Length: 371
Image (cartoon, rainbow, N blue to C red; front, side, top):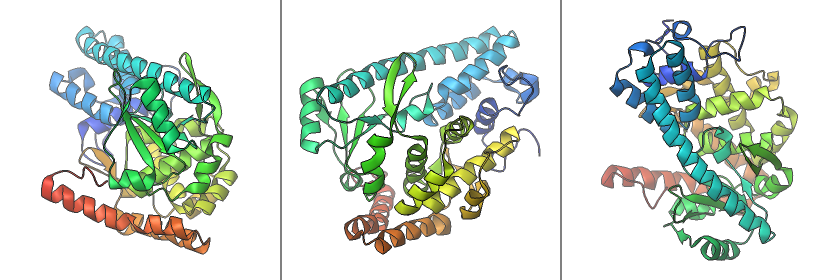
């Protein structure tokens, strides 16, 4: 296959970023790849092409990692002009992240001072990159959280969509913080149907360093289940950060796949988790020549893999019909078998919600207030 082609799509920015982030396995992994090794033609990048790559890197939460690799290659090549493009973008993104981390630390400290549990979910998975909002989970009561955020940060509550209400999450706008603070309370999942994972999240969380900050983050297994719920059951697309984050998490050796299988089966999402891991592994194999070191039972349980990914409208999309629809049906069946009737009812509303969002998008150009 040509090095500038991909079975996942024909976007040059996607291919370049994928190869910057996932260079082929080499002898000394500590050294950055060279432009010659990657054979990307980035030494001839126009400013417009660089801006396209930067926009994609931003929407895929890989600015710091992708542009740092680009910067090192340009410096090796003695290309001061293109190196300056990258350095300027990295400085701007670094300043955004620094500000967000200071606020995140303050918010977590305020919860802890009140004796409430607080766990940072999703946002720090991308470190040293950061998501476009700050996601948190707590078991504290909504009224207590609303009072704390208003009293301590003069936060205003953003309008809530139908999906937000079902998922039991609230978005707060804090003065001085461009990113929204999204707090999930007592429930997880696209319709708030996952109570078991939510209840055990804080007890399984660990304290981890992020730069000069320390935050409680989910255990590796919970992190993968949360990512799966977001990608395979809600948005139906992957970002590059999902590929890179999961690859790095796997390399730490902290994933207990037996525990992951047990927890995900109870939640009814094991087939989705296995498919998520298969997709990541296949993407890694294509770009770096080495996938995830997965137990055989993961591959056996996966309903599909990376061959279903297609780059459409800026993201790596997975088909809703029939693949994702079957995963949804399997999750709903598990909840019904476990006699979780209330959670089953919540989940059964998802197709209606998705349909309303699609109709709203088609009529008004926006699904705001619904999804």
